[in-house]
Image (tube, rainbow, N blue to C red; front, side, top):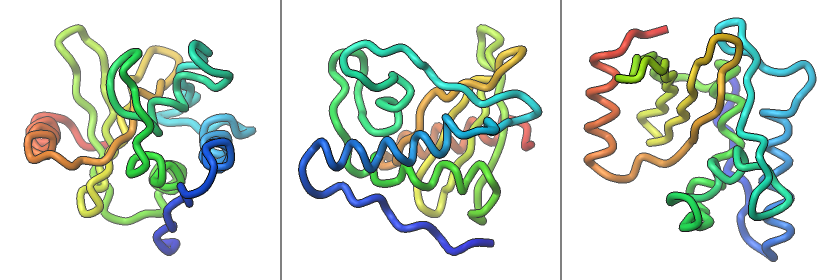
Length: 154
């Protein structure tokens, strides 16, 4: 196993911070060849709405819903963990799949010891990034524990 990655530096001017964070996003989600999960290409929400960057990027560096999304430095500094988690370079990651009421297959990667989770939606031909965030509320930790208990490890 590789050593645990450092956090991304989230200090300085916003343009510099954003550029550092986006470099990690590109290395993880825009790399060639594209990463795969379960033999399917890993994709993200590529819509560009309120800035010149894709929605998928904002879902791993901000918190909130819709127009109320705000920069979350704790979430953002961990963006560098995503690739190592997906590549199996970090020990202690719980992985499971659940099927939602609407039939959507959700894939969870939970680094419980460091309270960080990445969630994907598995579609017929692709796996789509949903979000990644710090698990910093007891109710969120309980919810993930229940989902893991009712899900199927992969």
